[in-house]
Image (cartoon, rainbow, N blue to C red; front, top):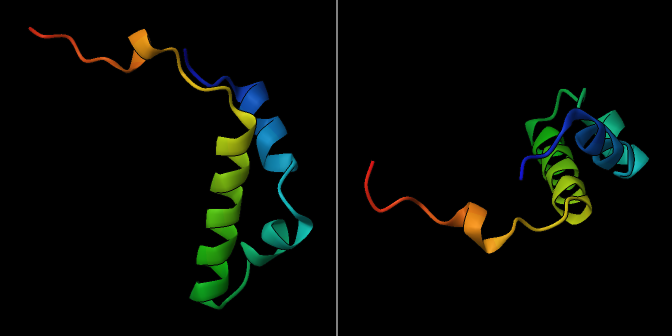
Amino acid sequence: MRIDADQLTHAILAAPDWAHAALGSPDPRQRAAAARELALAVLADVPPFPPEDRQLPLAL
């Protein structure tokens, strides 16, 4: 299972407003905090992958 563009867009828009505003900040610490908040919003909004999708093949 992969994240599609609509799921990702929804998750990003669900992040707090301060995170969106802080992405353009000249302060690298604020940008990093905002990026982390957006990442957490995406991870919280996306359903977990089924176990079979996380397993690597034994032989390539």
